[in-house]
Length: 241
Image 1: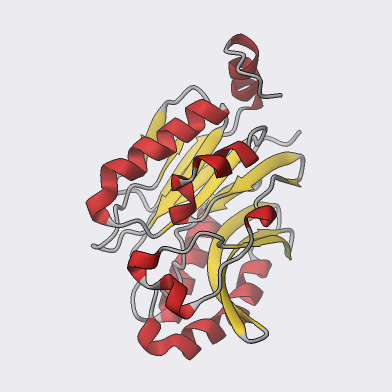
Image 2: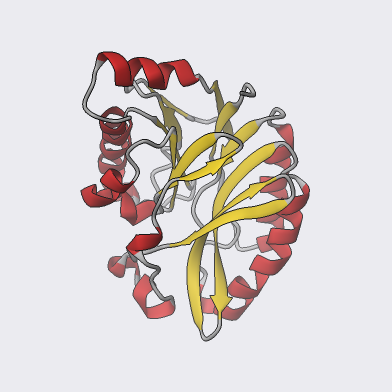
């Protein structure tokens, strides 16, 4: 298996979509070959409901640019995208120039009025996907709070959590991301926005539960070690294969 590096991103989303995209592309280009990169939820637009149509239309442009920088890299983020008459918040995995997986947000955050602007996906679509030999699970922000969704991702090597998590619930975010890594004995890459209403607590947690947070780093990088997963599941056997 290739030697991958894990990366959690942290940056501020401005009102300028193209500027946000260039910030993201720059950070991705700075990561190593064979990197897994997780960016914050809707990091290119934020929840810019006042410019809803423009926000949704930007997805097609962004997807094309992200495909170009995904050679030998696994890139994970969310975009608002229209399908038929409905708009969904899609988590997407880019790899080698393609969108290899997408998953619509199933648990919308009603306190943020998400249900008024977008349709919810299906919990049945929350599953483990294998990309370049790595088993990856996705939870989008609020979905992190549902323990039944953790169970659906048992056996994943990595759970990626793109988030736009409210700053008033900062300790909740830290506790839940740490606990998920420990309970599912996997790496958790959690990426949250640096905007002032969010926690800014992007970070990476190992299967043993050792957390590293970005702090002021736009990109936190740690090695991906499959031995850490195997070791935890062998010596602290809780029934995860």
